[in-house]
Length: 202
Image (cartoon, rainbow, N blue to C red; front, side, top):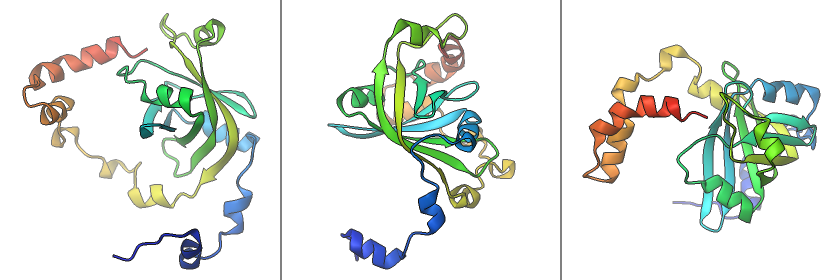
């Protein structure tokens, strides 16, 4: 196969970047960018560390982050699987990227910047839900923020209910685990998962 190996070859293949693609990038949150992010309950968090890259789904009941100021967003680290891949990466390499989805909208928002993991008691307890608070909060300093072209979401028809996949036609989490470990108790895991998830959401 023919492989592109230089930026110069890429530029020759794709041509010049449009003006809109350049001017949309800002170093602070504009009021309009803030409005978009505050409408997003879900984001993908990308980090990098010595072992490689990680991309983690993040979600919350309302906005997935709290906007502290025009250069800072706060992301509570709610209960998960305790792998702490993202956090382990951040404490060794602060570079992060966020992609925000807004249900029903084909416009996504992106933030590139740096982050630290804070365990400040005043900060963590400020995120209390049902009497529980996150053990840490990811504090992201914005390097650049911009919106993403809508073509990918339009092509995928991601918000079209007629394109939704019936979960009954997909492998269950227990089935996925059994595929990785042949003697895994798939039936018990799938039976107990909904209640376990409900009790450990926060």
